[in-house]
Length: 304
Image 1 (tube, rainbow, N blue to C red):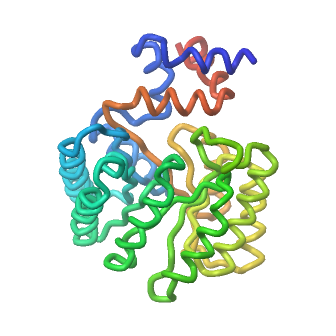
Image 2 (cartoon, rainbow, N blue to C red; image 1 turned 90 degrees about the vertical axis):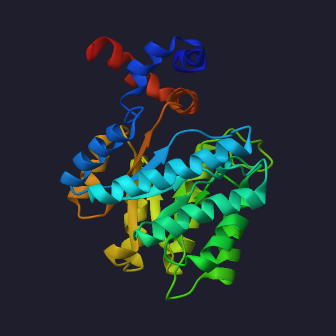
């Protein structure tokens, strides 16, 4: 209860105070901050995926600016020769303003990323975006079969059917589907999303089973030790080669578990967010996971 109260008040605290807490989970405000983090991860055998923070924009001009920013990010990181991919939120490209313009902007990013041999993943946002983001992915997958992926959230009741439908529509041996599977972070009503912790776990594993047995490249995004163990059991059961899956975690979260997974010989990729809009990202993360308040206390009083 105390954790929930603290998490609920955090968005109203001074930004400088929130930054003391948030800097563990965000690389920084600038691209060079993200580059330093990815270089450090790479030195430990871990790949990165870069996310420029900022979503739910209000004008199409902002979407155009974000397009140019991402192309510049890909250009600079390609020169650095770091091992990383890129994650984008379609709302930051105008999905809720003009779907066709959004498609055009994201396509331009994919054209450049493909030229540089880079992979781009379309993040899944809240339920108002789900169908549109699947449609966006399918359009891009036709043109960029090996350079674009999508995210699914296990707590959404539609997810198993969505994955099944995409297997029928777009899955081939030459261009297999590439999905990140996570529990889900947005607050959704009970009629469309599972609320019970154990139910979410069950459906996460059900979705992952569907992906692995059908040859989907699975990016297994979890910080839950139980799900990690169960995922490894599924990987062993289906004899999935190491180049057909990876584990994914958020920067700053569960580093001990992350290191255990890497030591066990599994591929790991860490989601590295950066940018000036870190406040909303961190406020939402902490509100949705009040247990992070324990880290907040440590950050303020133990780490100084």
